Figure 1 (cartoon, rainbow, N blue to C red):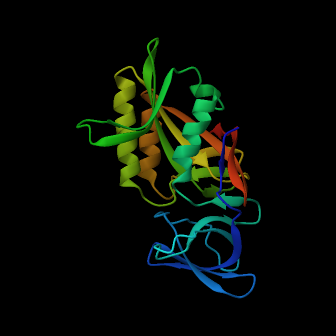
Figure 2: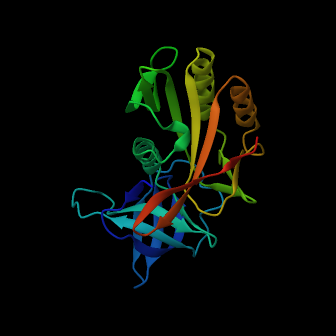
Length: 237
């Protein structure tokens, strides 16, 4: 299975707090308090509990304002990946490697291809083959757990709703349209929309499926060395 390997082993520290949206403080094992950047603009609901073990990548670039990037946190039942740059690249590599059976057999795969009503949106992965309809794959970083389900979103998302509407239009044109939820955790057995958080999103997702949009969710295995695509989860809408 495809793996995102960190350039060096992550540093473990106790999570203290997140603030100003992009800043995270944590205390290393020697008592040093570090301030890290997080690229995750979501709520990270259920993850950010003070005292939990968190993992950070240290950068040697002296030009960086913050020398650390927040990568994952230990919630007890699993490590959970919070770096939102990883899902798109990991899913792309997994598809190219043939690790995603549902999306195998395409001749070409490209990332960040313009599409949509006015060509202003970008699809995360575009699969093409002269003998098949084009396949549009939208990838969503999924970290929230409710019961044994991986759920999305963890906050109201008008952007996510727009993506569902655009995928629905592609399905109606006769193309393949796939919503791919990457659960950056290993402790879930199924996926469902977080209707209690964003009921409009759940409604649109079910409408999209009726229109022909496919839904996939894969879990991950995580360690301080890397994140590996694991297995498909059951979809329960």
